[in-house]
Image (tube, rainbow over all chains, first blue to last red):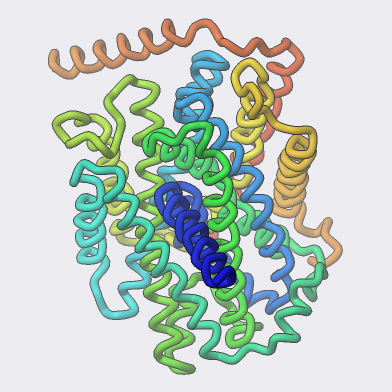
Length: 424
Length: 62
């Protein structure tokens, strides 16, 4: 009887834990899975084709990196009850505020284009014309936000996150070698050494794992969801689960292209999906569906990040809990972003692949500036109280910033002076 | 034309209100920190400009 009652109470405890987590989860998982956007899927697919499994360790390392950065936004949003844009304006004044907002707008706008590039490319595999894809995407993205409830939007976004996990069954279809995968998780240099391509892959991988929009997005969702200080531990768990999912998806994509497309000249995830169709139709289809889903989720989150930021700064009503007539400028900016990005994607002759590649590295290059302000805010005891960064958190996060600057500099040097590198 | 000018004036007015609202920072940065952040931003933007130049020249070549 004792065993039975113990089991009953343990089950009740676990169930209660899961119910509370289900209420709080959202911002962390959504931002991390959306982080595997169209550009990210492309980066992983290309990385697998170019380096096989030899960079799996690097992708695994990016999980904790993303966690430590994004966790800071949970604390900052829950304690200050302000979005990131407003927090910067309030704490550092309008000069730095405008600088940060301009950074966000530029990188967001460019990244939005890559999302639509990914979605149209994915649907083209199924012979759906780009203009139809763009119109359908506009309709879906409009529906997601126009019903006037944050919770409804969140549940739809979480459903899209589940679809993003399609790469996991895709990888199992090809029966990868466990020992080869484990070997790839050991830090090593890919064959070819330090080349321009290698640094580019590092930059693009980092840029797709931590991006300025993620900082603004997660903090704004934490505020819009109404999270408070007591929800911070749950927010951390939400972010940790998200960071695991983002790494798992990345690794599984690399496994697929690393096994089947290694050594081939891949420039995009859509190209990889097409190349995989003859091998296994399900595999190619899963890649294409995953790419479309990644672009859709990314586009929704990125445009919201910008809309929230502008709403915070310009004093517009800026919540998904508001209907359109209550927050007209918030929704106007959201749709402006979607329409502009979708339209540019449809321009004939646009160098879409190069745009995708450039956006990844540009976002990574500008990231240290965004992170520095985040760190300054999290180290202000007056603002954060007991939730100020600990010494360990500072060591980790400042190391991330320094690492980013070093890699960005190395890549820039490799671009300007490619013959300086030993592997070139 | 006049309506467009009115819209522009309203917008500039809004920007001025925002500047006035956030005129006084609540976190005081030392001059050294401010200068370091500015130099970092300039450095990063310069790198992006270099990358943009290379990407554009790649497009032109192709």
